[in-house]
Image: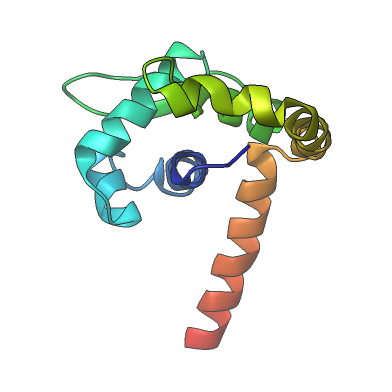
Length: 139
């Protein structure tokens, strides 16, 4: 089991939307600049988050909103929304889990238990603390 960079990007998206929603129109281009990645990657992840029912995206005019309070969106919700299940076309991808399932299930169970403890609200609170510290050092 591996957590891809898409998971981190998805959490970055939630942090940006929460932090900048009242100041800027948060679009895929805005997010891509913040993440330093291609807007196409951001749009794919936004689509996955939308399909999972975690966000709403206003096409054309831009703008992203959460579908429920940040405290009700766990890291596990985000992980399940953006991580692929399995690649059935590649022979290694098709068979690797058969070799590793026992270990991966134990690791996944422990990871999911931990992921349930953290929410998007935790990112909000942590970001507010970091930004406050940053502002106090620049004054």
